[in-house]
Every structure is written in structure tokens, then in C-alpha cells.
Image (cartoon, rainbow, N blue to C red):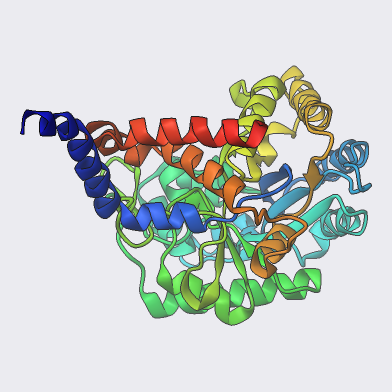
Length: 412
Ligand SMILES: [Zn+2]
């Protein structure tokens, strides 16, 4: 009977792995179902474009030249998706009515015609892809309410060209009321209608329904998805989970990873079949992010079979400071470095990537079970939420052994 003790560690390990698999079955299943890309994919996702000073025209033209300069092996130039806000406050009219009623100036106004045309020129040259970022980068009633007791917000609201990025962070969220923290929910019917209308107005301004929407500050809810989907939006850009409000300190809050909306992976579907794509890497040269770091991160994501959607913002590229020159240089370096390291890299728009995932295009999606399983093990080991229980139960150890065997199998 004593020899049976030999099996005890194996029994305990088996029980631990089973416990791990049962507890985290939904997350593991989601990681398995997330498509594995068979080629590296790089997308630059850039937000906060829209009504702005005319000097933005030169910035956009410079970006067009820079992006056109880098082409992947099938000849596609680098693409920057442009998250566009359609309107800013009409400061003069709001001032004239004593801050009693909100008025907006939109990209359809004559004042911004050159900007609108420059964005469309970039689309025609296949280097820009326009995405809906919101009618405004804020909820107008919230900002109007906040302005009553805040001199800075008041003077912003009545300025000549009030840009959303100049607001306090909490007020930049469009789909909750942050005028008083913690933020409160907006009326669902009003939100659904506003989300629908902003997508319709986008199509009037640019002549096409927005295929992709990017929630400002990544706070949104079911009513927003309802309105967008009704208007024809097919893809929502997510940071990996949905945030649905802000706490008393203004920090975004959302569901835990094991709750609905708490975990988004590429290709996952939301309400009405809306597909999520995940922005997984920050690239803000203004904050010190470099091309070299970005290419290294790209390599890690490629090993996980994922595309890289770099998040960046207009603020990196406007003005004439040395920081702006550095931002252009880092973007140039990122595109060049990525192509050198991954000659088979593909540039595409998020809309096109979503289409490939949707149709399970065999030219983009890996089908080999062995490769998919290897990537699944890597994803599991890289997923922070699983880490603690994986280590405690021994699942981490088993996955590492499995990954080593799987990798060796593929290289022999
Ligand atoms: Zn934004």
C-alpha cells in the first residue's frame, strides 16, 4: 500500500488543475476562442481629431506624408485610424445667452471645411480610416452643469475653439454624468437616441456610416451600443473591458473580469453582434513612449497571436515644440522598426481587421490546432487575472511544461 503515496503529488496536481479549470472556465474558453493571427498586424489608433484650429490641416498633411512612406509587403501604406469628434461648443453663442443653453459648432461648418477635406484626402490615399469618437468628447449637459460652479470650465466653454482634451479628465467622458462625482447614470433612452444620432450625423459629414466607434475615455453602456448598432456601427474599440462610470475620485470603474463586460477579447461580440477589438498598447511620445519600446511590445503581442492596436492622440502631433518633432520621429521609427523586425507585417484599418475576424479569413487567421494550442498556453500564462490561482493550484506549472513541449514539438 505504501507505494500508492507515490501517486499522491500527481493526484493533488490533477485536482488543482481541475479546480483551476472549473473556476476560470469562462475566461479560459474566451482565450481559446479568441482568433490567433497568422501574421503580425499593426494599427495606429489615433483619437481626438475633429473641429480644431486650421493649423491641424498641416499636421494632418504631414501625417499623410509620413504614413505613405511606409508600406507593407503587399504595398499597403501604414494606416492611422482617426477617432473623430464631430463637434465642439460654440463658445460665442453660449456666452451670449449667459450659459443658459448649449450650442455647438460641427465639422460640417464652413470654418472646418478644409479640415474635413484633409481627413477625406487621407482616406482616399488609404492612410486614414475614420472612426466615430462621439458627437462631442463630453456630455454637454454635464459640462454646462459643471460650468456653473467652476470658473475654469466656464471660461473653456465660452472660448473660441474649446477642445475636449482641455477639460478635466472626468468631464471628458461622454456616456455618464460626471458633473458631480461619483458619476451618475444618464437616462438610457436619451443615451440610445444620442448614440444613434451621432452615427447618423457622422455619415452626413463624411458620406459613410461609421463602421467603428471609440467610446471617449472608454466609458459606455448597453444603451450606447444599442444606438450605435441601430445606426449601422459594427465594431467597438475597447481597452479590454468596459468601464461604466467614475468613482468619487474621478477614476473609471467597471465590472470585475469574471462579470459581463469585465473581459473583452478581440473578436468577442457584444449586443446586436457588435464586435470588440482591443487597443492593447499605449504609444504617446509626449509621455516618453519610444519606437523601440513599441516594437518590443509588438513582438510580445505577435507571440500571443494578437494584432497590435497602438493608442495615440492628436495632442502628440500638434504645435511646433521639439516634443512634437520627436513624436513624428518616434512614429516614423516605430513603422520602420516594425517592418524591419517583421517583414511579413500587415498594415490595415480596424474595420478591415474586424472583417477578417468576422469571416474567419484563412489568410489572416491561424487554423492549425497545434499552433493555436501553443498560443492559448502563452495567453493563459500572460493573463494577470488567472495568475494567482494558476500558481496556487499548479496549473501554471503544467502550462509551462505544456508550452515547452509544444514549442519543442513544433521546432523538431
Ligand atoms: Zn478621446
